Image 1 (spheres, rainbow over the protein chains, first blue to last red):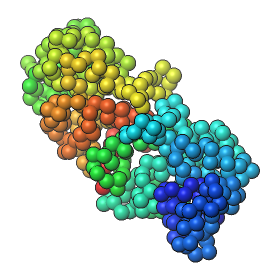
Image 2: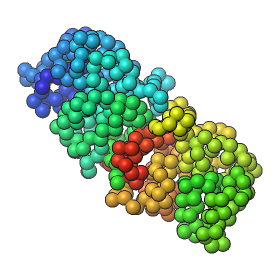
Image 3: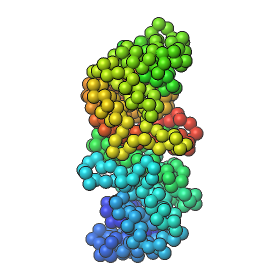
Image 4: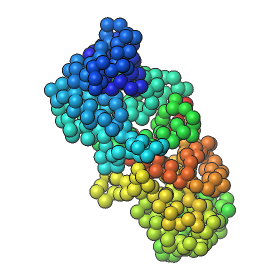
Length: 214
Length: 214
């Protein structure tokens, strides 16, 4: 599959590397086409790895992933361009974290709205699916490193888009992704971040995850 | 131990019954001393069960539990009276849920503040400890009914108070309560409620809990 990864930070790199390892073709998008991390990504892979602007990566991908900070996700989708988003599944893994006053961060949006809903409202031509935002990137792409299978959540308005994302998540090693419902349920997982960050502090490692036990 | 349970709903009843079963003496407090649920609580137990006003229950307890709705928790502590709260551990299990616009509820306070912090600011003479708010009452008092041990969180400014609460939680069957830090970490667990409520909807049962897997 041809996938556009929008963002070149640790999350974008980790996801792009994983997708290449699964046999997908990936174009990593950045503000500038000569972004250092994107160039390094292309250099460390075979001929299935590409780089370009946000717009070029969005045009390339049959499926897109927003892997930027929460503060820039909306700008990045705007830069991708409506024509390049139209009808496509757009996975949003970002979190609306505001670190401007230090640690722990607060949320830029919460409770009655979410970043994922903001993205969906701004880009009704795209099928936004929120997922993977409740773990760090090392966990996202290798969930089976823990002692037990754990849970990951999916939110979105388009049922077919969620099924496609769930299939992709399973290929990453997530055994049974939980469909929480429409895109407004992204509030629930974005509001999980403060607890996740506190547990990271308490435990001293980001390599953990939530399991729903019945 | 003499414990005052403030609140006569399902949560208050479930906690009070559990405390009696563990050998504690419990006075259940209500707005009116002749509250039907509190009277029934006294009737179904031995001579260790009592009822009274919020103020009388708070005066009785060496340790207190706020087990009301989030919308009334502050009023209940005010009614309990500062003299009756002074120096005592006050466990807050309530959640700031606003059901005025239906299901799912939103949070009355979140992100940059929490109900527990509001209670602590209003009553600096008490040692507020937030815990048990991330499960339903059947889970609170019987955590070992699940297929695996799961996690419960504790937040509070007073280290000795948290140790006392952790000991009480262990007597309920919680194997290893996680101390998240000061009372501001109650934001994290109060913001977990939207996800908990959505999982209840998706799974069709409130009998589940979060386990942190490493």
